[in-house]
Length: 223
Image (cartoon, rainbow, N blue to C red; front, side, top):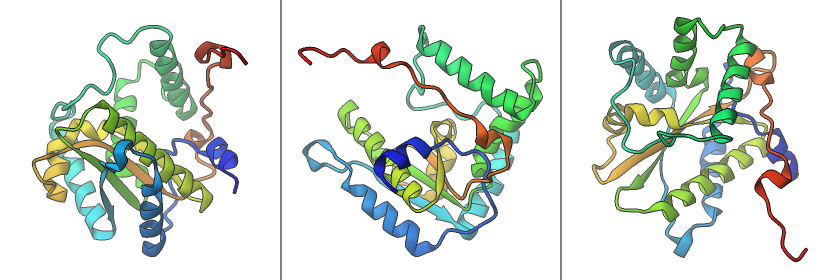
């Protein structure tokens, strides 16, 4: 698969097949993704990869935690700015509404929307879950390195026919996750990720997110 094909076919997959991923394969891809660029070659990412009984145990805990604390534990960083302006707010609203429409969940069905959102914390039934942490004293440049690592991993997954969903919503339960994986106190949770094989018939996986036109985000000078 060409890089362009992997990029075009990558989706935020939210329904996975009950099909395992080989341990050796995921180990290889997690290692290969570390070729992602990072300023000064700091490689600031710290990964925890869960599968099997480790994943089942966390999902069991999360089912109880989400029921007891539906709003989460609070985040250690702002996933979105508090005053998200146009056009960013419109883009977020549009993709959210399109997703719930694909599921047949109406705008006034708050319970239905909450139930679907909570599936994040079951990794959408994926066989693997990944958590990405970073040292607390690192700054914005190193946080951008995390994004480049995760993007590299997602493209490598596509090359192998696998699918994924990056999930910053896990930051809402950073205490539970950090405790479960026994992460050192100097590490902060950035995001989680579901990994597996997409369910090809589930309607949510047919969702296509449109991108802004070139002239909306790029200015060319001298060319």
